[in-house]
Every structure is written in structure tokens, then in C-alpha cells.
Length: 236
Image (cartoon, rainbow, N blue to C red; front, side, top):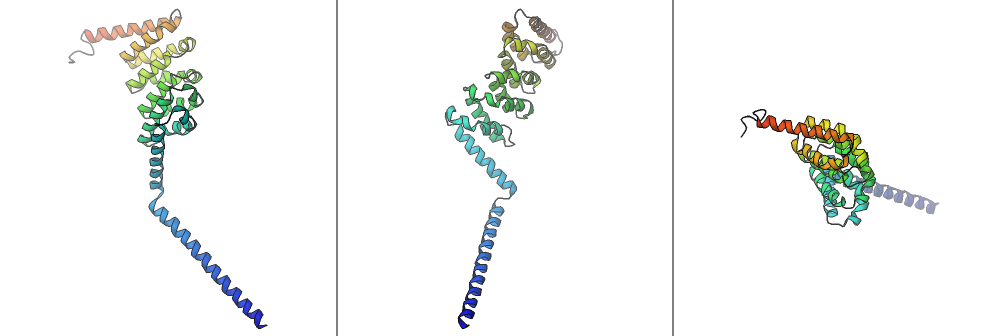
């Protein structure tokens, strides 16, 4: 009986010890999590993540295009981040990959969406230039590129003109009327002149080519107005 009583007492002591150990371990883990959260509150953790993203994108700028291909989904997603430096680095990677257009075909839809959604002119410019080197995604992006002819940034407008000029003649003809209307409305003489020079051969012999003639006439009228004391009168 004494042996049984002693054994029972020993088991109770062991159980209590195990319980105390378990409690101490849980408390230590909780303290560790609390310490990490103190050092990385939600906003700080987000900032740390963006710093990590910058470092990874910077590393990608040093790699050969073949090595970057598997990271393209992350690169394209980075074009839409709030962090301006992340977007800048993603643009650098995208422009390097544009020399390997086949690798970007699968991302045409995301790039086209960014063309209309991004508030960053660098992103819109890079996307327009990239799309000009693609195949089917360029054709699918034609309407989005036409809308960029009224972009607030002159370089983006010029890139949109060049990208539209890379379209097959049939596709370009389909969008010529809308494009000429926007160019006329925007009043960008350089973009209009680039469109006339860049699209004329593909539209030669087509009815849409006549619309370029109308755009040329519009440029001539603008020139006369500036030279005859119109809008530009008194300007240095």
C-alpha cells in the first residue's frame, strides 16, 4: 500500500512539473510573438515586405532574361504596387524582358489592364513600348492603345502612336477613325505627325488612309493659326 501511495505521489509531482513546463513554454512563445509584433507592427511589416521586394527586383535586373522568365508574374504584379521604387525597378526588368517578347505573351492581358489603370506614367510608357513588340497581345490591346492617344504624358502618347503603327494593316485600319479623332482632339502636333509618318504605308490604298489626309490638313490649319497671329500671338 505504501508503494502504491508513493507511486501516486510521484505521478502527481511529475504531472505538476509537466504542466508548469508546458505553461512556461507557451508563455515564452507568446512573449516571442509579442516581441516580434512590437518590432513589426502591421504597417512596419508591410514596409519591410516592400523593401524585400525592391531587393529581389534589383537582383533580377542583373540576371539574364532566361533566368528572369519564371519570375515574370511577380514582376508584372510589381508594376501595380503602391511603392514607387518597386514600380521603377519592375519597369527596368520589364524593359529588359521586352527583348524576349515571346516570354511576355502570356502576360498581355495584365499589361493591357495596367495601360489604362496605372497612375504612373513610367509604367504606362513601359507597357506601351513592351506591347509594341508582342504579337497577339498587341492586337488585343489596340483599343487600349488608342485611348492612350489622349494620355496626359507626351511620351506615353508617342509610344501609343508607335505601338499602333506596329499593328497589322487590317487591325490598324479598324482603329484609324477613332485614333484620328483623338489625335485631332488632343492637339498634339508631334504625335499627329508621327502617326501620319508611321501609319501611311500600311493604310496606303485604303479608305482609312484618307483620314490621315484629314489629320494632315488639321496640322496645316494649326500651323497657319500659330503663324497668323492666332493662338500663339505674342508668344516668345
